[in-house]
Image (tube, rainbow, N blue to C red; front, side, top):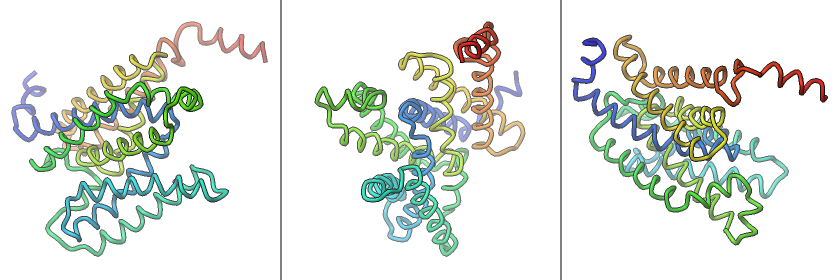
Amino acid sequence: MTALIEPWTHGFMQQALLVGLLVAVLSAILSCFVVLKGWSLMGDAVSHAILPGVVGAYLLGVPLVLGAFLAGLACALGAGAIRAVSRVKEDAAMGVMFSGMFALGLVMLSQVRSDVHLSHVLFGSILGIEQEDFWQVLAITVGALLILAVRGRDLVLFCFDPGQARVIGLRVERLRLLLLAVLAASIVAAVQAVGVILVVAMLITPGAIGLLTTARFGRMVMVAVAAASLSVVAGIQMSFMLNASTAGSIVVVLTGLFVLALLASPRHGLLRPGRRAEDGAADGAA
């Protein structure tokens, strides 16, 4: 018990836990929308595309969070524009946009010499997060959660059935832009904790766990938030005890929870009772 409790007596560990939980809650809720909408690649694309925005913001002397947000939003909108004016499908357009912007960011990063550790954008720095970054994460999280609370029902309908949303008078394109903006903002917040390389896991895996566990959206959100929060607590604890990467430890725990849900989920688990009988019946029907 002493070994488990002792790490949490340090101030930097307590702040890391608080920041991690803020990121976990926002990412988990948004991951449910991302998974239902089929925007997993969008999350990956935006998370990688923010790198040139961060470096550019540093060079211009403006807040890094502003540059990251604008670059992520530009990637998402640019992919949509390419799809609209050409024969290239959206997934290919996103691949072109995010790989090009990420490569540009790496080139810019290699040319910047400063006392600012911009490499934290790649790998995260949750254990050494600055007070200013903490307040930024808090402000982004609160703002994004308020937007999701106000427009959540409309966004759920947009994800499930855009056609029905259009029929009842909702402006689907505006909802798409709103969801993209919240996605970009949440990625900016998550990058402070886990970095570009691993942020996509926080935006996809919790929602996938919820989807495997339940068929109701409200319960899916609760399962996703619980899984993400547990992974943050256990991951930070594991990284402290093993002297390992904190971001990597968080995602390893989260991936372990996904594997557990994949195998043992009472609804869709591969090892649940009656699974073989259902597979046999399906083969017979085919």
